Length: 308
Image (tube, helix red, strand yellow):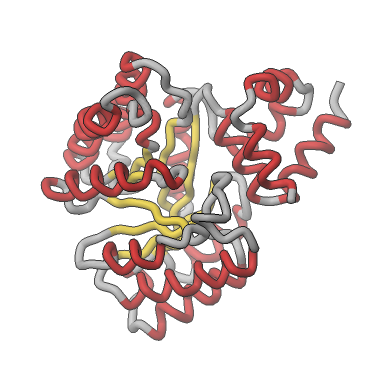
C-alpha cells in the first residue's frame, strides 16, 4: 500500500525539498545513482566491463518545462556517447532514454521528442551501440511506440520497454516480438488507475510471466528487467523451452540492487546488463526505486534516523 503514496510524493515539490534536505538521503541516493557527472559514471562502466557485465545508462531528469531543457537533455546524452566512444566502450554500454526528458509533454511534444532523440540514436549507432526508449505512464505510450516505430526505420536496433501491470501490454508484446526487435519487460513503476492496470502484485507477476513467454517465443530479443529470483528462474525456463541460447536474451537489473546476482548470472553465461542512472536531477527516479520495494524504504528510513 505504500507504493502509491510514494509515487504520489515523487510529484510533490514540498516532499522533494524535504527528502533532499534529510541527513541520510545522500547515503541512499548513492546506492541507486552512480554519480552526477559523466566523469563519475565512466569508471563504473569500465568496472562493469571488467566483470563481464554490460550497462544501460540513464541520464536522470524528467521535469522538463521548456524546449531549451529538452535540448540540454539531448546534449547530455551526446556528451555521454562522445566519452564512451573515446574510451572504446560503445559495445559495452547502451543508453536508456525517457522521452519526457526530450520534451514529449510540451506543446508539439511528440515531434519535439522525436527531433531531439533522433541525433542521440544516430550517434549511438555510430559507435556500435543503441538506445532503448523507457516506458513512462500510460498516457505517453502511444507516442513512445510511434517514435520507436519511426526510429526503427533507420535504426532497427532501437529498443523499447513494456510494463506488465498494464492491461494493454500483452497485445503490445505480440506486436513487438518481431525479428530484430529489442524489448525490455518490467513490472512498471508509475501510479496507474485500476481502469488500465492491475493493482494486485500476484496479477502483475502472472502477466509478467505471460508476456515473457510471448517475447521468448517471438523472433525478437527479450530483455528481462527483474530482481525477483522466481521470475528470473521462470524466464530462464521459458528461454530453454523456446530453444533460445543464452546470448539470445538478457537480464537487466538496477545499479545498486542485488549486485551479487549480476555477477552470478554473468558467470553462468547469461548476458547481464546493469541499468545505471546518473545526474543531478535524481529525485523522481529515486522515489520510484523506493516505491518498488519496501526494503528500500526501510533502508532509507534507517539512514535518516541514524544520521545527524
